[in-house]
Image (cartoon, rainbow, N blue to C red; front, side, top):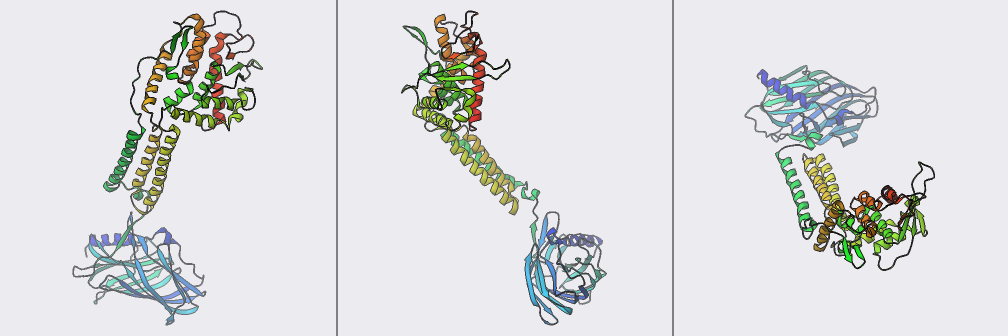
Length: 561
């Protein structure tokens, strides 16, 4: 046998002697158990099954003796070698072993029997999957001495393997590369092995090569050892399948959006919408299609949120349903606060969500301070949002409530995401296709994100959106300077709630402030009044502070905002 062959065989042999971590725990033995003699005989049959008989001379220190046979050992960096052990039996002093048990443990079988004093134990079993192909040809190997919790002073092993051509043997503690004391092929082609001293928990493993005349077929089984790298293996099959599933998920989400999530028609920005109606009494404010500020915000971003409700409150104030009174500070640097006073209950001219907001704000009386609104609104704001979502459907701008559509898509996406998490865990544990589960998770995430833009406007809703865009351009680019002085205050006030929902509060508050044409303090403008010595020219800062404070109390009152 060449040096190269021996080194190659030895390397394979050493890898086979390294067990899994789970087999590191040996059966507990009595402190004074002693093995005084050990001999083993084995033979390989034509089916590749190794029949083993071990004779152990034992001086027992207790009444139970146990050892463990490995069914899985480390083969290389990525794989473990699996053995099938069956037909296990044991005798003690020529009689069937008393209380003999054979139970499966992690990567092994634990054999236990009742014994006392001087005893001769004979173990018999068969082990399959011992024949493997290697770069040097077909080989047979098995750790024949193993699993004893006490040392063996001398082990003698004889193995009959037809057409054996060479033998290598290593012994010692697990992982040792120390050669056996002697190992050779006898004239009868049997392997004759002797080892002086096998430590407690140690092994003696033989490895023998077969000639080309051997008819026994390789039957070794190898199993990939779990690791994070193996669970998420990157190769053509795993990446290809993952990309395919992710592509299908993205295409599915895109198709759902294309057929169900797009507006019925696409409307361009259009020309600026001048919200002015010329009448007998002069120019009056007129919103496009009579749309209200809260409706504007919901149509634009498909969400009934804080700014929509704040703008609705401002609109109700401008329309004389309540007045906003800025309270004097208790100290120069004290907190700003406002008192809201209800002027009338409102009738059928109010939309349901407007009436719900008035009732929510003034549920505890006809006056309320903004600073006290947080807890009072907690149980009532949900109804305002419900009514606002229902209103945009009633107006025919959406076929279905935008929040319900988002919830359906988001729920479906989260279910798919959760299924992907479970699939990733399962696939990562039992296969190398963990990436496939990760692709399903990403598909769920894509569907969840797509759901945020899924609410679709009807043709009528898209047309209204186009007109709202025109109104926004007007409020951004134009002023009230071209209107008669007598109409500017009212017009700017009516524009303010729409400006607030479109992010232009400061500009149109300053339009109102610009109507202050003297240096005298002002009592107010009907829907908004300030403390003593307050000037209308201060309303820009006052309204900006009010919008911020009222919106903040809404947010703290209801986490869903």
